Length: 139
Image (cartoon, rainbow, N blue to C red; front, side, top):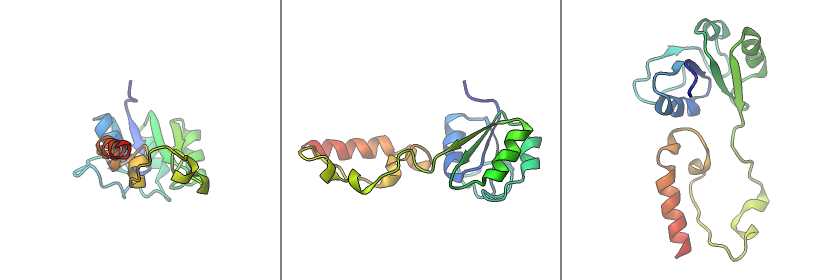
């Protein structure tokens, strides 16, 4: 079950929350522009959120990102009571050893890295893009 009230402090996550749990998004940063026409309370920027405004919204969950948001703001929110979930900037930290040469003899599909992340606007089209690329690699 989705939390009843969510505040997103990360623009790349806001659209995913708005589309996957309609009606649950109570607040978002001034920089959250998707989906178009997003009508929620604005809570400042990613680096300078208005924690008092966020707390006043009485969210069940605040979603943050380790790269976008400051620990001092997240600590203030945690102290005020809502659950604060801090997600990594990427779901997997790629290294130089992760290229196609690391998997000799296996089919390889090169795709835009945005389709390999687990949040944001690219999430909607990722299954089709990745499916086409993987099918082409197996031919």
